[in-house]
Image 1 (tube, rainbow, N blue to C red):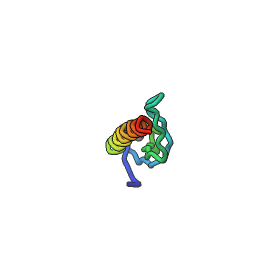
Image 2: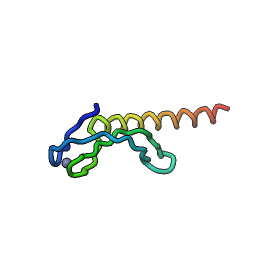
Image 3: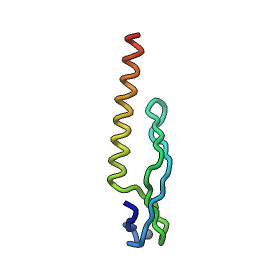
Image 4: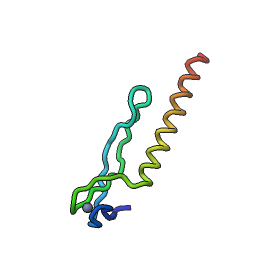
Length: 76
Ligand SMILES: [Zn+2]
């Protein structure tokens, strides 16, 4: 997906790759190269619904991973 259209003005938008941090403390997750859609016309910035779903999935996976690390420590 290289082309997108702005939901605000309908203008052409481009995909930028950004790094963002989500959550805080133990739940902090930094995700690199997230596709951010930026309108060339009105400069509106937003994530596609698909991208937001993928971010949610990454965060859930990270929570499972954190729990696994904790179990390993208890077993040692
Ligand atoms: Zn726009």
